Image 1 (cartoon, rainbow, N blue to C red):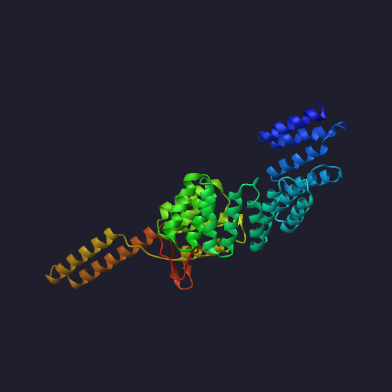
Image 2: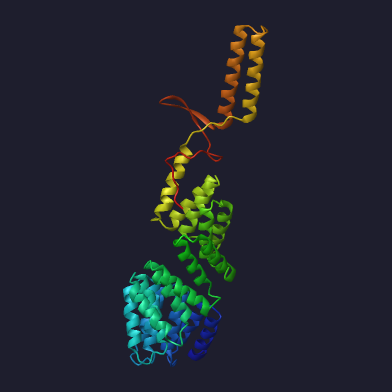
Length: 381
């Protein structure tokens, strides 16, 4: 297969989402010394690596393209490098690349670079600058203005200018009623403003629009948790985790409702998984420590049936004693027997083992069942 055929085959695989196969074809094309468009092959190869989340490899491909000073589309390549750097969280470098892209007068999709610049500044928490770039992108007739408006709303949300955020989210929805993430983001503003009914309405609309979007399920779960509808909240957190199984916030929140549902073993697993996904997740660390305090709590539960029986027998015994049917010694012996029976039943039904401690014989209880939370233990949602 010559270089041109390999390149065309690679583009076919790329169009089908078969990025690894596409890369193999592009590499074969580049092996052909007579292949006359190596820059295009390397540029598309870089995009394929980006789709495969191999961002360093993508940057390598793009930089090789720029080694050819005669390459006709340097602005496009600089924009692509900026995208890769954004994914690598190297936002300052991304900004530099977008600026270089905009220096190319032949760069056609300037709206993309303006929008991407806004994303980079947003990640740098320079929200006012981000808004400037998003507004420029929104004015480009070739760019999807609903994306730009949605991100303007997000920037205002982060600036705590909630009325402005609402304005842009509603503008986004009017322009593109199928844009599910805008409903979710609008719901988040209402949630922040404690307008819970309005927030729930927006989250449910987002779910209706795009069920496989995890964040609206999570946000709806927060509302249900606040309303102590723990089974419903558990369901929503579970759906969110189905689509994003390693999200530490989702895992921690599910752990919280499992504690409230007294499913401590599963709660522990979720807190541990949250910490595994994000070792710095302070809420999950706190909740895991709090759960251990519950596990150390010792409680005794007296079976109701046994307690009722002992009370009835005690009353009967006292009656017989009062009517001279039992002697004083027999009465005392029977009462001691009943109390011993009560103590033994509680110990053996509620304990896994005894151990000798500094204060004598100590009772340790299996906390897989119900337990009483110490007043000092508080969990964080």
